[in-house]
Length: 165
Image (cartoon, rainbow, N blue to C red; front, side):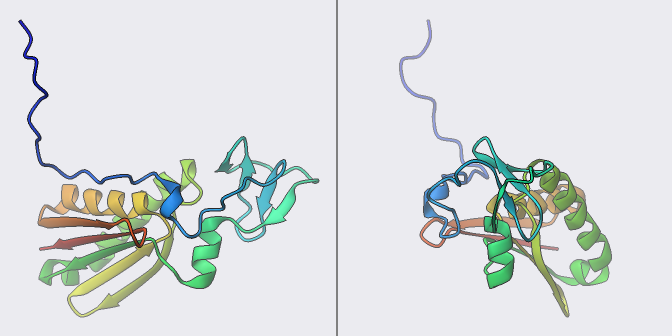
């Protein structure tokens, strides 16, 4: 006989409402009429989402949310990699972050690295999307172990990923 109660809560690394665009101030509320192309990156808004397609000549010119974030310097994700290991292996960590970006950006044009900054003992990668920041943090943790903390601030539409080793 199956139990009639709900399964117990199991804590893990899940993030509440990551894909809810309502809280993102850069999310365009209305869909562009017809097909639109980003004047910055060339991504095409077609069938309700941004995609890497060839833009038709009659496509409406606009700026995608990722290019708007890059232009304004307003990241949605912060990935902080700290510690002696991060300092010694900064090139490998950044190569891994770029590989994750390449993989994510191929399917999701709005997921991009906005900026990279390096300080003694700390490397910070900012992203245009929450999912890319989370994916970079998980990839670094998977490859190099260490401690990983993920904090989502829904009121700011911001994800902070802290990794240290």
